[in-house]
Amino acid sequence: MEKRQLGKNGPMVSAIGYGCMSFAGFYGKTNEAESHEALAAAIDMGIDFLDTANIYGNGVSEKTIGSFLKQNPHEFTIATKAGIHRDPETNIRGFNNSPEHLRSALEKSLTDLGVEHVALYYIHRRDHNYPIEDVMETLIRFKDEGKIGGIGFSEISPASLRRAHAVHPVMAVQNEYSLWTRLPELGLIQACKELGVAFVPFSPLGRGMFANKTPDIAKFSDVDFRKNTPRFVEPNFSANVKALEPFKKLAADMGTTTATLAMAWVLAQGDHLIPIPGSRSAKHFREDVDSAALKLSADNLAKIDKILPVGWAHGDRYSDIQQIGAERYC
Image (cartoon, rainbow, N blue to C red):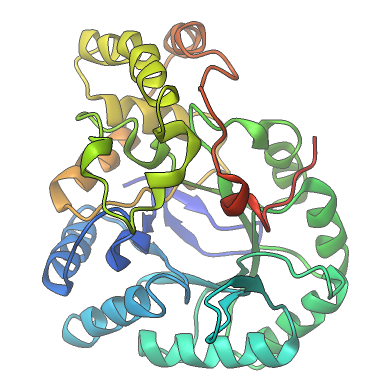
């Protein structure tokens, strides 16, 4: 497995990481045994970078990783996040970047993971009650205490990144990025490259849209994240399925799978990109990993761009409620 650097001064990690949100059932039912099987397969495939968050199943994802590590000690590079919380009485989602909340969340994450240190700690969403410079000071204290190795942010703007980086080097920024979500190209990927910050695309396969088998929206459970996402709601969904047909044909003509080609495209957008596909299945994850060996030519990239030009997707990537917290900058 090819290695890429997690930020200018960070560790070398597998060019493809493992997004562990699926361990908490966001895209369908799963169990610990299935998740452990996927983690074991990841090790076999040379994957050593795991991405999780305290909000994924209210600790389920982190605990699943922790129980695996207890049974199968392995030196994964682990990233986790905090900053999103739900009011215990109303269950309404909000954001909290206070020093007290972030410390409490970090301590719980370390306990659930069964580790004393994580390589990368993200602010999952910004809480604008706290200037990003003040939040950086909180994270720097965690780093000085040896609890985290690097600082990251999720779903922020290039301007916010520059403000944070002026206080202390940021190791990584994580935003949604794929062939149907191209917003980071309007400044964020470039800012990361300039500053020596790793860019970590989540949902690089369009939440399953670029899987070899088209998602069946009729079978989405009530807790499936995609159920109310505009791109998976009719008539947008059918329009997106139709638009993808030429891309699927291109993949077949190239002797590869739709998922592998879509992931190879993400990897080709810069050597500072480290995508983190997520899958409940070891088999499906292997197809994602195969993309690291697929090197796309300029002609390949031009064909893909012609088939799926910027802005081709029907519908927003988030509903109005899901969008809250993600910074807009264009």
